[in-house]
Image (cartoon, rainbow, N blue to C red; front, side, top):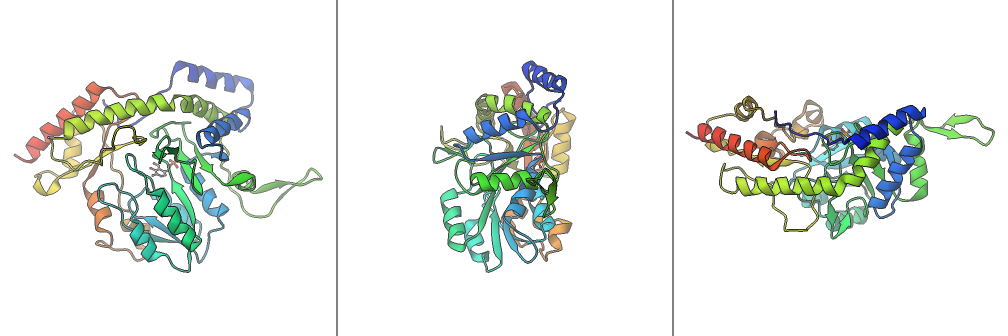
Length: 374
Ligand SMILES: Cc1ncc(COP(=O)(O)O)c(C=O)c1O
């Protein structure tokens, strides 16, 4: 079986986890602090706080930004369910815009057109291989006094004008789910602005509890329970140290995909970055030429699965989910997102994959496409 995604966990990391388990301190403690310090160093010294997932990170970021009932949050219809869910859970209204068909980045002209008096935040999702234009995004957000929560779940290690994602900007959230660039089993982090926000996140991620001078505790607002255990943080520390190596492996595999897909099969590919422009590759997604295929995407995926190759769909159109439609969205609202959602196929990519595996995937795709177009 060629896995679609997954982590590389070496023996030293496994031994390190065993040490944490033996230490008796298994929930949040010194390893979380070390993980946060290492993430902060990666983000040019900005404060970072670890939580249990990127979903929790976005939930906490929205709460930190004070977003709730009556507020609007602009986001891209081409993203993962998390973004929609957390906006709705916060009590705010999701305002969708379309994405660019090739880069899948949020269409900032459409964001500008939808910004209104109730807009409190913009949540763009960064795509592997091409970041959202941060200069244009922040110029727009600042003009309108909107907060930005960058969903950087897929792009830890990418760079914008030479600077790491998370090293610039407002609130930036990462995911350490096993399919991401590094893992802590489950886990996430928020990059924020200064010590006050960091302290506020510490409260929000742990019940909303404040410690009073007399040794008792109080809760002034409903916090969640999103603190990352040390066992997870121990893995995260080891993984972060390996990030450059993992990204180099992923980049080499993606170069092979680009080389093999240049001619066959006739799929639309992500933009191929120039050498050294600092893009990380969490996923390699192609668009199937369904108009010229006598096979559905499901049948194409089944043909690959029959050869032991797992694939994914990234992502379904958020505005057409049952929850999205509750806000009045309909088919045809966002043609680029809908075209992507209908045709996209995520091919196997992870740091444990070999170039021969990519070749096997490409051979299987070519054979399936031959049959689909015969
Ligand atoms: C773009 C994007 N954002 C956020 C998330 C949520 O990440 P987590 O599983 O850590 O909550 C995901 C998960 O796949 C994602 O793909």
